[in-house]
Length: 121
Image 1 (cartoon, rainbow, N blue to C red):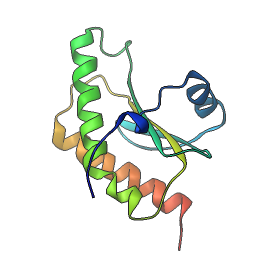
Image 2 (cartoon, rainbow, N blue to C red):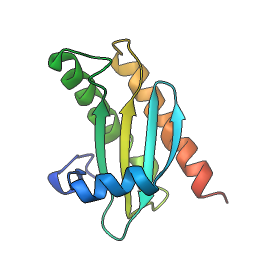
Image 3 (cartoon, helix red, strand yellow):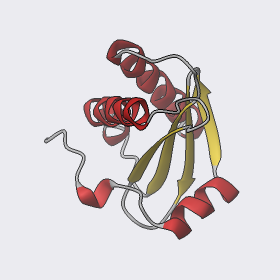
């Protein structure tokens, strides 16, 4: 299995994002929050960093890259549980600049919480 983050996996539709924030549920592991909503399409993922917390675009872009890379490496946590047809938005909610190890462990924690909350055996 390829660990990729292709164009068809990216959440870009304004309607889908709006519906996600209006009707979606969330789980969090500070400093990350995962908002999710079941849809009929393929799994789509978006990332977001607050402009209020990071004024410089360079910092926001760096954090977004870290979030996308952590998702790409850990999406097997979703695939192994046959989770398809969800829209996800990963939000970074801290004022501190993170390193990759922090983001990676928190992405795992958020996905584990999501799996536990929605797919209890």
